[in-house]
Amino acid sequence: MKKRLIVPAALTALALMGIAPAATASTAAAGSAKTTAASSAEAKACKEPIKAPNNVKIHKKPSHNSTSLRLMYKNTKGCWIDGVSGGKTSKCGAPDDWDGWGYISYRGTKGYVPNMCVIPA
Image: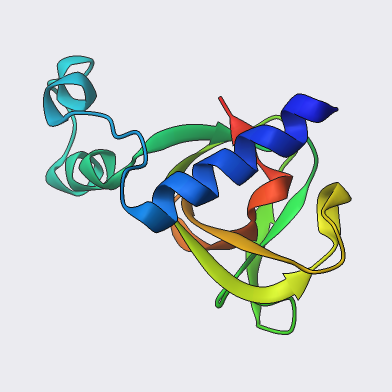
């Protein structure tokens, strides 16, 4: 349980400072020479692969009041692009005043999830 709280908080802190861990272009491109230009560009934008331990809604803006774009299903993988501050949330075990959100890419959809709801893959 402690790891689940520490990792997203650390990712958010690093992302806000601009030093989040990033995959290099050579690592992202090395695995698949057959990728299209679109998926290659998305792989470069990916800073870290993530996984959803439970179903989580992907929002248009970093707020629970914003439009839900789609559902990231339990145990599926996506891509962490950036960490941002947004609306307060208490989802996924976060404290009541938590405002950490992640800008992610999941199956072609880019949007925001509370960063406590995803873990590194």
